[in-house]
Structure formats: structure tokens, C-alpha cells
Image 1: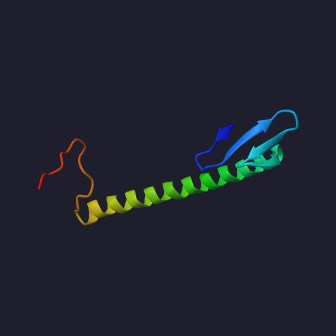
Image 2: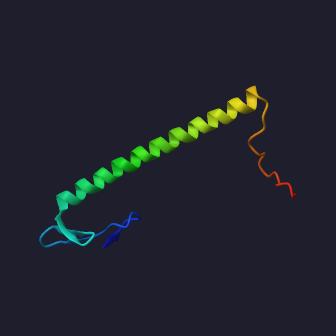
Image 3: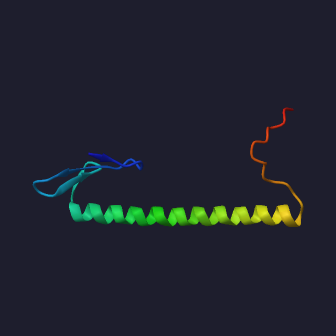
Amino acid sequence: TVHFHTGIHCSLSHRNRLFTFSGIFIEQETVVKKLNKQVIELQKALEKANLKIETLETLIEVSEQDLKIKIRKKSGAKQSKL
């Protein structure tokens, strides 16, 4: 049995090439299609997250350079105690 972090679990019966997918029997081809679809969705989400990170890093760089605003902490800097 394989458990995915999305709450989906599946197991394989080698005899008839059927999986149980969240408690429902389905064919191996269907499982592969579902998993491929999930991989594509996760790749898109990762691409979107990476684009967001790149955009925010650019925003920080422009703010620091043009507006002379210090946003990033220096590595090893201690937080001030209020």
C-alpha cells in the first residue's frame, strides 16, 4: 500500500492488475493517468511558486537599491529586544 500526502492511498493486486485507490478498485492504467495528472498539477504549482519567489526577490532588490530601504537581514544578525 502506498500513501500519498494528499490523503490518497493505493495498493496493487499483481494477479489482475487492479489497484485499490482510496478504497475503490480501478485498473492500473487509470491509476497511472491520475498520478500523471497529479504530477502535472504539482509541477504547475511549483512553477507558480518559483515565479512568485522570483518576483518578490526582484521587488526587494529594487526597493533596497532605488528607495534605499533595508529589507533583508544580514546573515547572523541578532533580533533586537524590545
